[in-house]
Image 1 (tube, rainbow, N blue to C red):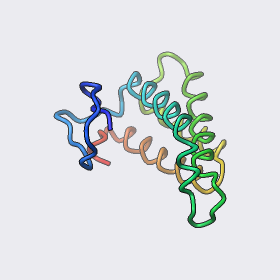
Image 2 (tube, rainbow, N blue to C red):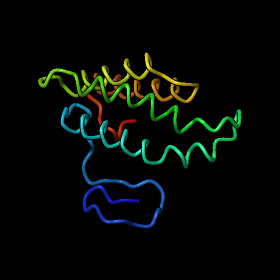
Image 3 (cartoon, rainbow, N blue to C red):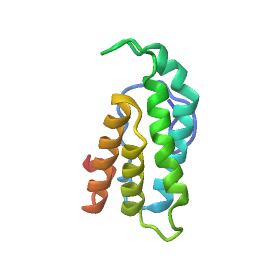
Length: 128
């Protein structure tokens, strides 16, 4: 696991806590997270596909997650430069739903919708 503050690798010791809450209304953070998450899924989709055995061993969960998030990432990249964090998260969630692949893609799009709802309410990542 990589420490988000220092960039150094650390042993995976479970959930981490951070000194300040991550603000969902920060458009720069939303854009960076979307790009980073898409890149991570692109890189790791094969590994996820290989462990995909439930509910059907069709070995496509990683690919479906990547393709779904990629659609959201494209929509965020095309969003106006002055879009707010909540607007970007709503754009991300909608594009992910419309481009969802498989059950895992639909589930991911609904998780993203939850982020968008929390952001619209003024929440932080700690509130989730």
